[in-house]
Length: 349
View 1: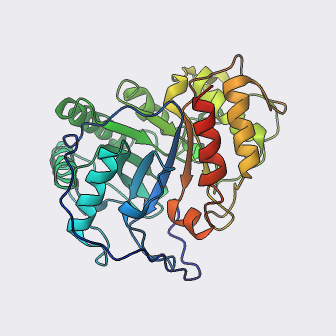
View 2: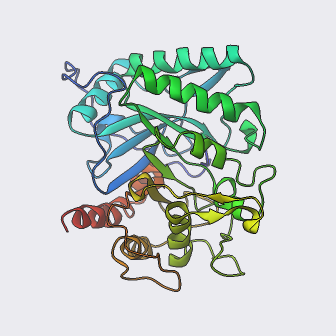
């Protein structure tokens, strides 16, 4: 995910009138995802777009991912909303969204985000402070979006401690929502290599298969996708790249070209596509809404495919994630309207 400092476009909403928060589910007690979900990240920082309060997020979004938590050392994390956001309003907005059937979660990571998980003490602090944030803000769960700066490589202590920590949190909150948003070299990159960052998320995914609600691998900012389906990489934004990426996650794929075993696939309902919301939201990997919808149809109905086609249709394939809600608002809903509308229509089939 990118904190891109671009031209200023202030997202101003109506004046907030204080109101009592509605009765909502207990913290960490997430409701079930809709059959096909639209997931979006909401900036907790002003990168020239201004800040959008949770209460002003359009109803098209089924999951709102607050980006991001802060690493405050020795495993401790905190959610520190931008100073311009009113804390009481934010808590009330989260409660109202949850009461309306939406899922609101806190993400760890981003382009500059880290967590410190080197020791058992770090893990204990991480579990304690994450639970405190879930309780304090009334959240449904957590999202793991750790990137290069967080040191996620094969054999790093953070991987084992993160698996253990999430399992402990899930035991505390049995209906805790858990998602992941790794970049594609960390996941499908295991087809190429199982060293360094390549495939480094696969032990994390394997360790949390039972706890994982949704995996949306970022298909942007890293160029084309290497796959077992042809010698050349599929270009970013193509229908084939989207379909191939999801098919690998559902049907599984050989590791390191077949020399290191195999990644066994996830359930289709645990997988979603992940694309930028528009041309300014990422450095590369943008796809048109029409092609995103066509890739979704290929995966769910085998219609609209290009050269890559899954072994069978996966009608329970979950949906689409994007970075970000803020950029989509700046672009007049050019992502959420056509893609969200398509997902809602597909849910009625």
